[in-house]
Length: 211
Image (tube, rainbow, N blue to C red; front, top):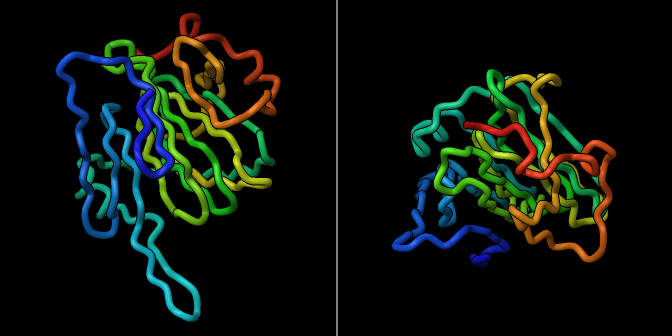
């Protein structure tokens, strides 16, 4: 596991000669962090504040398309609330209706994780984790082909995320949050609070994933 600045963690197998790529997104989207998980982008919008309060664009389709080379269309917004130590994931949706997700937090803080589950990918089974909070206003773009999960760090956390396809329960899948093959370093002492579905999720080696 390599630790990067800004409460970012990334678990990656070592590859000889590898150099982390830095995806730079200028203007309103002002920061991304180095990651070898192609397509995963951490966004931090400009915020404008004065004595009245603040304003920022939480989503701008034109800027996203132009500055990330990833043209997306969102069809659904989801809003979840979780008390401290609740862990949701690792979730994903299979083709023909895979979901890309743009995740942000409006109350509290979470540790947000994406896992590469594309068997043909050189970073298959690798993970990327970052703290998203109402205070730092960061957003994580997770394209199709990745499993997603998060841990609530604050007493109460509310998460908003946009998706690129509608929920399809027949294609909904999960992977165990503590799969040792993936090795996510969740910032928690003791056991998290899980749904029955997540507690009974299969390990990666038994899961139906992307080609």
